[in-house]
Length: 325
Image (cartoon, rainbow, N blue to C red; front, top):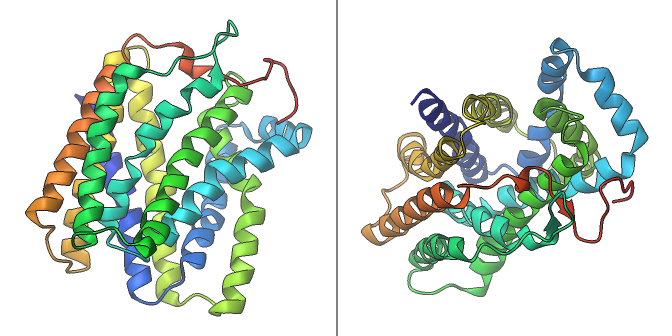
């Protein structure tokens, strides 16, 4: 129960990302600044955490030894994840983006065959899990249909759905790849700090583009982005990994903790109603939310039972000691 409560608490802090990204967009802030400033602000806090744990030197050594690995997969796992998420915030309410983001559980299923286990055997597509994934997909479609007032326009698809779909695939792919390369070598905090540092070139480029297009960020956007960096990038991440650490040896309990992240949608709905005075979702939209929450919970409870090879996957066509990307 303790791990479940901590997992739910982490969802509350994760929800801040979607609420404040929408707030910044409504107040005229550019998504370019919203995405880039978050990771720039995260660096010093993560640096302090890793330094206090005495793990900074091993991280620097690994990054210098294999820079291409860090640059490429950090771009995929962080860059192609958060930039599209903030861009999508311009097209609709944060709860809609948060709900669509739950497609990442489906993405995790479909990229499974791209990896091999330690014995060199390709991981099979978990067919049984597709039923729960279909429930999630139906819920997302209900939300998008409701948002489009009876139809999904090309503009909504390109600005509100496609970016989140890209992010949903990029996040698990990039992070699984880094876990594969450094499982047993670096801990979670080292990997997160390393990927944040390696993704800085992208965020600096977006900052330059933002400066040219819209000028410097407003003081309000600086404050809100700083809050997002602390709340989601540091506090929520620490809480979530702590909760999973408590139950790491019990597959069923671990699945239950991971399922708590589906509550993000509910917290974002409540947060936008309180902070942004957004109207309550319609009955149809709430039906979509319920489908997503049920699908996430059932999928997590079923999909993780009896698994063990996913923790150390081998990418398609790659040997365990391969040094290239």
